[in-house]
Image (cartoon, one colour):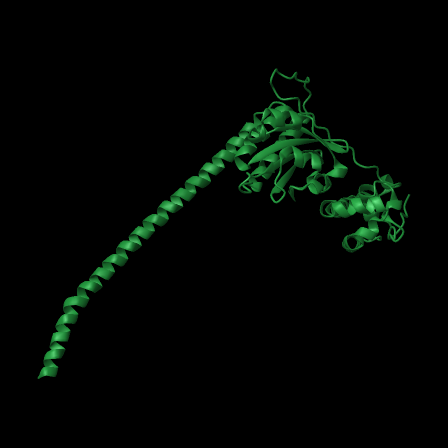
Length: 344
C-alpha cells in the first residue's frame, strides 16, 4: 500500500510542479526569441543606416571634387574630402626627380607646418617609397621610416616609425604627377584606404578633364592656396631601334620596363641601408647579391631575352636607379646583363 501511495504522491507533485515550469520555460524562450529578433532587426537597421550615411558622404565628396573649376580647386577639394577617412593628409607634387610639398589637410594645417610643407623638397633618390609609387603607378603602404619616406618627410611630420604611411598616386596621361600622403592618428591607424583610393581616382579623372581645357592662369587670391601645377613627366628615352618595332613587340618592351622598375623600386624600399653602404664601398652587388639574384630570376621568368630582343631591362634599371648610372658601383662580382641589346 505504501508503494502505491508514494507513486500517487510523486505523480501529483510532478504534475503540480513540472507543468507550470514547462509553461514558464516555453514562455521565456518565446520572449527571448522575440527580443533577439527585435535586436537583430534594430542592428540591421543601424547597419543599413550607417552604410547609407557612408555612401551619402562619399557621394558628397565626389560632387565636391567635380565642382572644382581648376586643378588647384581639385587639390583643395581632395584634401578636404580626404580628412574624414584618415588622421592626416597632405599633397606632394612630382617635379622632375623630386617631390615638393604643396598643401596640407586641415588635421595638420598649423601655420608652422604649412610653411615648412610649402618649402619641402624630397629627392626621389632619398625616398624609395615615393619612387615605388612613381614606377608602379599604384598605392604604396610604407612604414614611417627615413629610409623609406625620406628624412625630410619624416622630420616634418614627426612621424612615429612603427605606424604606417599611405601613398596614393594621382596620374595625368598615365604619369604620376602628385601623391596624396595619408596616415592615422597617433593612437591608431585609422586610414580608410578604399575611400581614399576612390577619391584619388575621381580627382585624377577630373584633373585629366580640366587639363585639356584652355584657360587663363588664375591669380592666387590673398590667403588662398598656391596654384597647383601638374605636368606629366617625360618618359625615359627608348632603346635604339624602338620606333622600328611593331606595336605588339613595343608593348612587351614597355611591360618589361615597368616590371623591372617595380622590382628595383622594391629593392630601394626595403634595402635602403644596404644600398647606401654598397655605394660607399663601390660594391652594391656584394651587399645585395641574394636580393638582386632573386629579383633577376623573377624578371627572367616573366621577360626572358627572347621576349625583349635581348634587352635586359632589369640590368638597365638597376644601373640607372640604384647605381645612379655608374655601373662600376655594382662591384667586380656583378655578372652584368643577361643579354646585350640586339636590335638597333
